[in-house]
Image (cartoon, rainbow, N blue to C red; front, top):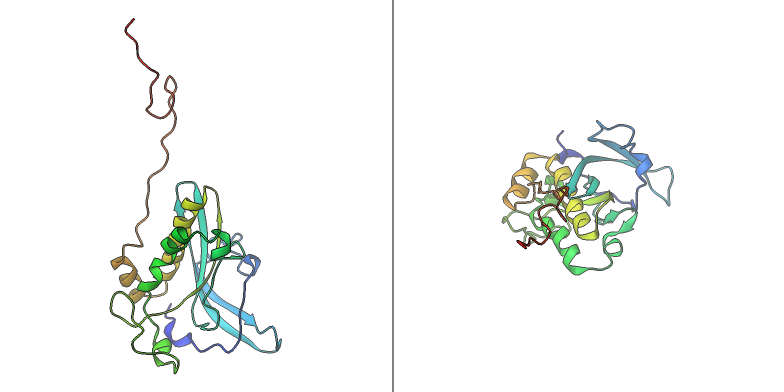
Length: 201
């Protein structure tokens, strides 16, 4: 799908979107599509926004992300229906580890043409900086592994939006999945490899 032509200036506040609207659980194959969003103040007005979805895993944590672009009024990432800072308890280390990929998002054609856009706004690859909004649902594991799963899910969803996004995020090293898992405990041992103390006599 080519998205640049529909990233219009949306003159309304979208706010949080419930998971039920996208039917991600029921339709596992639904990776991208359109969503009609209604303005809360004027119910007759609605706008169609393109979105992509992706999964991200780290250790025991599994995250499902939904990413859409074009809403410059609400560039917020929500995790389990809470703002990112609230969900991760204002832990600056975890929040920074998630948001590092934002410096590698390229601007869309519409964002470059926007009257509010300034040419000095560039990302770490030297290209004009872009913006996203996202909804993430995550479960399992601890906050640290959830943070890595959330970032991976957001990045994977972004790479589906276009080749430019994929190349830029791959340069930053965000697309690679960490496949390491906890090794199972073995019988006769205390943990995966830790053995009881050995005594000759």
